Image 1: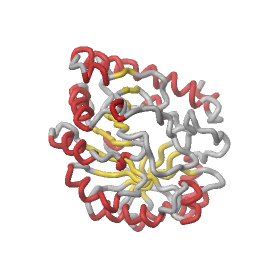
Image 2: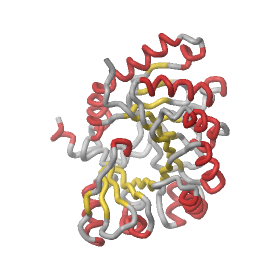
Image 3: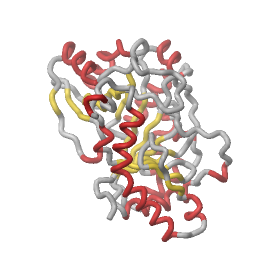
Image 4: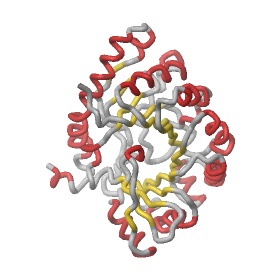
Length: 323
């Protein structure tokens, strides 16, 4: 019997990105991969049907930068046409949204999340390596016009980089019908920079917002909205969300699994455990394929616990309390 609580599939369509963010979570970049090693849109869409049969309801397309995939529209159309996924969302850096938002909506995409590092042009360029803030903001407007909503803005706050912009980001939720989500930063395994003492705890961000805007009002969330806890500033058009990866140990209740562009299925983004679906898929070994997917579903609960102990240990001063 598989884990019934798993209803969220993250599909990593690309290992490539046009940004070079200094705090990138690019754990799976592999420049040795050839085009034939990567699942095409049709192959990936075929796998989705197997996940749906095991309870997947929400699919999020991630990367790298997924909009670098030339077949992104074909993939979304194939999945949305089956009408078996309740919600299809996509996470992007927003650089290509101005040109592609309307076509994404037409293909069947429901909503987008945009990583936004700073609202200051110079800081944005310093963090991402790209002079692209204006283009990202144009992409955000295009996503609103295409009704890829409610739009989410994801913000990793890091001391010394952008943490003094908390109030500016929060103000966006007051003025516009968008969700601004503050995410506790956790370094990737291959990140050469140690941010152990540079992440900003979510409760610090919440206190700062309440000092400027008044008490945050708890807001209801749906099961398809992921791990964020949402609030509203009084009379705001949008919401404030917190994803406290470190201080609240969200791994324990995680309900997602991850499919990579090369056919590997992981129970966790930070896990070294995976099953390879590419060969049985291409060899039409559907019984083997189904068994491998079920194996990943089964191992998920234990991976949650092991990953939290192994990877988060040392990043959080609260981990000793959890032990």
